[in-house]
Length: 131
Image 1: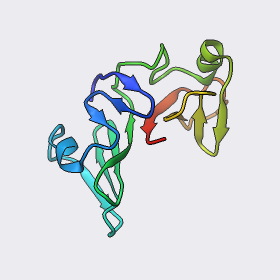
Image 2: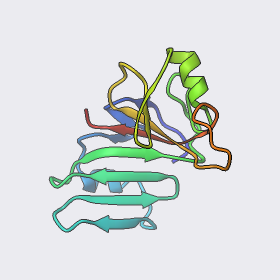
Image 3: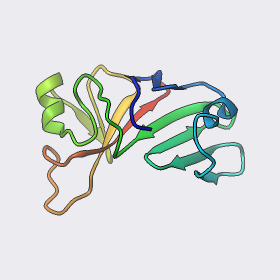
Image 4: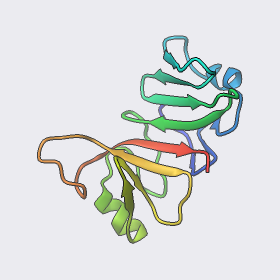
């Protein structure tokens, strides 16, 4: 996926949270990898996209990475948490995930690089998920 509007808790591009797996997968080639937990929950991975489907077959999370060009209010792949802090006044983290205060359904994962620094490490993944 190269571009698409990011709406926290709702969608990235044409991939809407809550949409059925059969409809979402039609948007992608057959070259993806699927990890299936065995109870219906699965994760489908394509070039720079990951799709999480709940046990009822609906999309519950989508992630985009390198090569995705669009942004959420100027924050995109390659931006930093310093950029987030400057734009939104702050952020908070839980484990490896970084969130913007008062923006539900959106988070970031940072690139794991040498001399890693939370403020300057580039954003590697943008996730939109069910609230």
